[in-house]
Amino acid sequence: MVAHDLRGRGITDPEVLRVMGEIPREGFVPPADRWRAYADGPLPIGQGQTISQPYIVALMTQVLRVNRECDVLEIGTGSGYQTALLARLARRVFTIERSAELSETAQGSLSELGIENVEFRVGDGSCGWPEERLFERIMITAAVPDFPPPVVAQLAEGGVIVAPVGQSSAQELTVAEKYRGKLIETPVCGCRFVKLLGAHGFLD
Ligand code: SAH
Image (cartoon, rainbow, N blue to C red; front, top):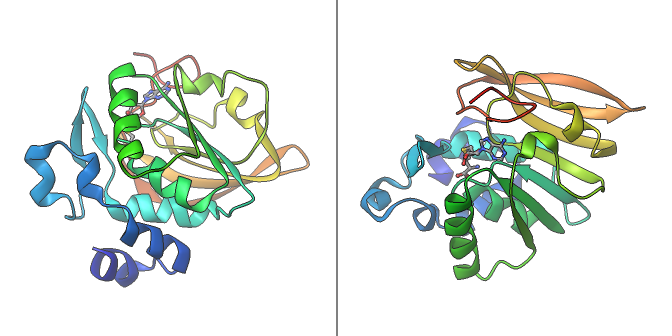
């Protein structure tokens, strides 16, 4: 997976390639799907949700430019696979998920890997992290019509945010940097994610 689907397609950040090689994706998919955990496609994780394609996970991680000095907010914990990768790169990860069931499963998967620098919450991540604080990096792993204002307000100056932005049927993976309080956006590629359902996402 790392050699063919990632390095072969433009994932060059050595730290991203390292953690993609370290975190076992099969630990985050249902047992019946473990045999295809390293195929380059999304897989169902229950509750009508999916774990994203490895290439897209790597690409989002690469454009976010995470390092040990970063506190990262992740919106849409899902299986926890992306959370685990971020946790290996960042100082701390704060992850929020709408489904209590998915959050609980993800917490189990991360604790099995001995990952401890993650804080889990259940709630509507489109409203941001429930406590007032800033993050150096923010990743939204579900489609949003626009960068949600309460989430952008929690991005530190000079911070980076990445999200699939667009319509519910198709989006543009977009990375943005906060400069003098405003977002400078750069499109990365077309993509298709499940919807972020919430007050500043899509309607249920
Ligand atoms: N990064 C995940 C994939 C997430 S799929 C992984 O690696 O497995 C998107 C997730 O966002 C789903 O689990 C969905 O339940 C969650 N979600 C949808 N709307 C949300 C909201 N408003 N707040 C938090 N999570 C939300």
